[in-house]
Amino acid sequence: MTFRFFIFSLLLLVLNGCNTKPEPLPFLGIKVHEDDKPQIPEYHFIDQLNRPVTPETFKGKIYMTDFFFTSCPTICPIVTGQMLRIYKEFEKDDRVAFLSHSIDTRHDSVPKLKAYADKLHINDDKWRFITGKKEDIFNISKNYLSMVLEDPNTPGGFDHSGYIILVDKDRHVRGFCNGTDPKDVDKFMGKVKQLLDTE
Image: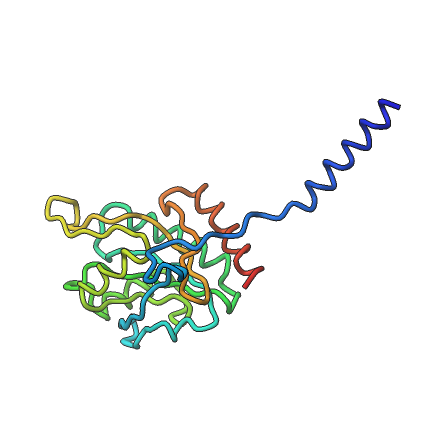
């Protein structure tokens, strides 16, 4: 009798484990109004093909985003490499897009961004590398929970976080990872798939 009860209990545990759903992804960021979910504000930038980039560009899509500059001598090549890894994972999925903000708006011209993108062999419609007014990019980085600072004492002249951020179809930040840590990026890709399953 005890053995049967043990087997029954074990079976219940296995069945419950099979039905366990992952926790819903949180809504992260800065609230504009107390009752609202945090949302990325309206923006207007220019991409590597000199095309306007606005929230309308990503309508109906989720997207991954980061902050970088083309001459960055420290973490940018690592983070961009991890972004490229995610890009290749979701390259054929039309529901997914990518957005990289240059924080060196003085030097990262449209031709420089295009040359940078070309080296990665990416689809210019799927992954936008953007520039714009410095204050606009620095300000929106806060909404993405990313740190961006101009610092002449830092290699390259800028200090910034290496986060890769996940944004849903309604411009809500739903997750992020350390773009210099491949294992963290692996977990992050699981969150991307989870979000796609619920959108």
